[in-house]
Image (cartoon, rainbow, N blue to C red):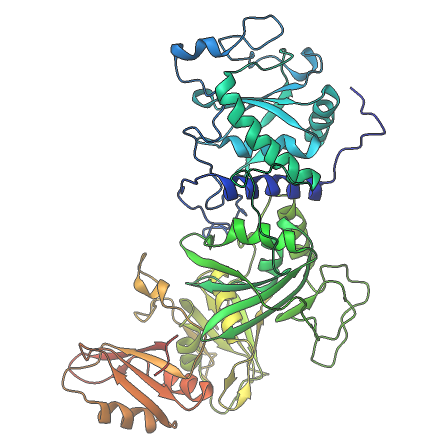
Length: 556
């Protein structure tokens, strides 16, 4: 059926925003039941951006539940009128869209388990007033009644072109052969209270004088402060843009490290979008079991971005310089300097259907601007091994200030790159980028007389070869404070201070843990800490005790 020109389908962004506004209201007015969190991105393949959100599930025992079919004692809820939904509460699954004439009652199938009424209502709210809902939870189905047949036609036409999704699961929507829903009046009153509240948000008016129905404080700022806890996999500026752009237009992002934690400031075009993103994402994991988002409103109301690079981005100013004496391409879209692959992923992620994929990312890094007089394959293995299991290292024969480092997979490579790019190593600022190579080739036997290439694939020093190792939870950016473990019995503070001082640094502070098998040692700079880590990790202290050294998030 053709669509009236006067009623064009709402744009994808409007649909997403209205669905989020509904969920915002549901969270603000009704008791929530906490579901098991699912990561926004799966660690195994950096995969799907999830719409699962903490606290969005409204309590279903009386608050929002309407016409939930529980047993034969509720058969009197439904009218036996031929134009109303009958007691069996189902349309034929084989009935196709074209076989049913338009109706303001829509049949929704293949819903996820334990879906909430608010999430189903969210499908219809952008197209007009939702007047009733019937959930058939045992069948993963629902019936949604809109205010007018025209609104239902617009919704069906829109979701014919754009796959409807609930919790990142495709669902099926078609016209019902019923013309209206009739449900129990007491339960229906509860539904109407919810629908009036969310409709008022949609209309921008006050829904009720009853303070228990709606009481939303205006968001204080369009700028969010984001802290990433337990950051095992890399979280880049582009990853944040892809995730947060689902909630509105992201204008600016600034990333930085503070208190040894990766943080970001992100500015939306509208404070309401910031509030929706905070409500939906605070406490969620970007990847499976790690990279937890902690989100608050910033006191700032506008961000001043000077450069478009991997640390900051102004999507409204693609002409800004990169900070390295170059000017960004003026033909860039609002995605700024994101690569075409990332841009495609961002667009798909904004539609809620695809996500980041780490499967095509090389596990080989190119480290350049190295101090060729000091650097060795072993020292690079030790440093990059903080963030992944290094398999091979090759210092380039004709360019000895550059090296290829192969890690176990692309996720580890990105993690190492995000933490080590720009760090000062042996007096020079190291640059780390992804290499075009997929592997590091070993030289033929007898041809590497300078020992520039080394295979570490069988090394016992890999930190992450054991699944579930605590090392996965203790990955931090380079810092002046180092964590020491496996300290030999009888070794005192003076011994360790002397050991680290002889490595070329100055010890600023020292602290033993209670069992004296672990300690914190603070050097005067991050560069000194990097150097001593490369020198002393796996240092043989005698008695089969090898010192373990890693970066710490703590200070002394």
